[in-house]
Amino acid sequence: MMMEEQSKRFLVKNEDTALAFGSGDLPVLATPRLIAMLENTAKEMPLELLKGDETTVGIEMNLKHLKATAVGKEVVCFAKLTEIKKSILFFEIKATVGEDVIATGTHIRAIVNKQLFMKKI
Image (cartoon, rainbow, N blue to C red; front, side):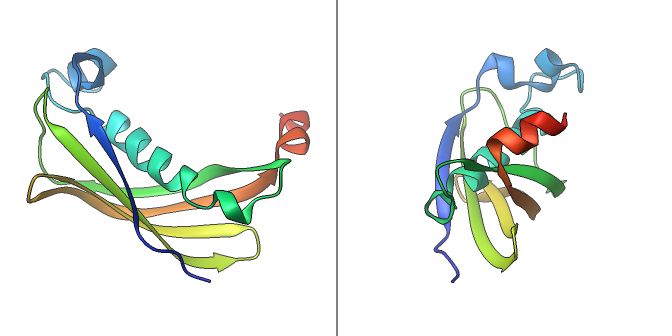
């Protein structure tokens, strides 16, 4: 069963910048924050596949951050579930600002039992 593409909107704030994260020296959208936005979009997508005691955890991210984004701009993140292998979910992801694609990539999440997962760490 493949799902439709899902999207979420995020407004870039000062605390989202590379300068604030320490990942760069400029007040533009930080790559770690962009990754978090895309992960959040993918995380919320497969909820109907999960039992009450399950969640998903990110296990791989492959991202090309193609364009800088200024504070005050709206980023639209897209996640499309492309494959399910047992408890592993595979996504195609991208982010846009207006007509510009600012990032593309893939993301993999694993379905886990919340309590068992927390006991292991």
